[in-house]
Image 1: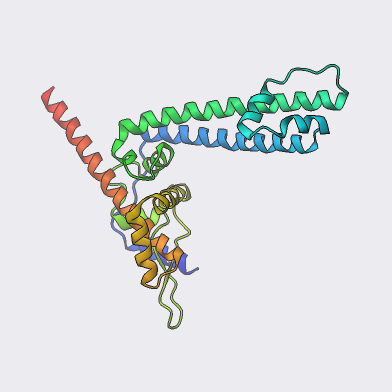
Image 2 (image 1 turned 90 degrees about the vertical axis):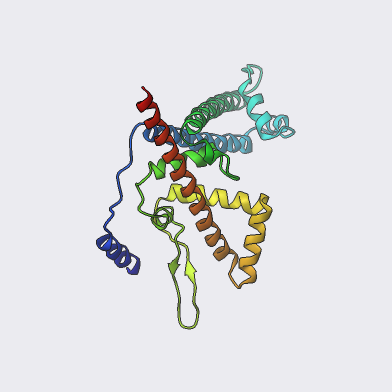
Length: 257
């Protein structure tokens, strides 16, 4: 209830209403991301189904597959041939495994092809974002889809709120603290969370930052919240600067023509 009241007051007080998303490159990225996401979800469901088939398979078939790891199992089962000498249960289990494994391979190939298309578009739109630690083609594409274009957000704080990384006061009595923002664009929030986890694992400066925040009395989750806000600020500056440079280059080409 308090969050809803706060959001309504902010909306009424602002003079800069949020702008709608652009189409074109941004919409192209969005549909590719959505299609790849569906392919990954269906592939995961098919992998779980294949695992279930192994659990309920005849003993001799389970023993045949036990020594193989999952990628090898998928390739091996996709090449299963009919076994007319076996009983009905064995033959139909082999057929079900082959069909499921081939579906997994097709979905994984589709997801990989879509990711390649996404990477090409991201490199054309904002290659600077891909240079950041922890940012891959999928997270970069989601950031571009949510950000859309320069000027859509009135400030860095507005972008942080959209990403769900702006702090929400959660003080009580003598305790003065903030909590994570559970609203905003959850797909963008997931991208920020992925970047945060990678940097906390691989980046020495990030490890130092988190350790300093914890030494100041913050919990690990609070330190992550602070780090997400820093990452959000860094990404927005890069996006805005890259977009200004791109528009400037377009204008120069137009004048030259």
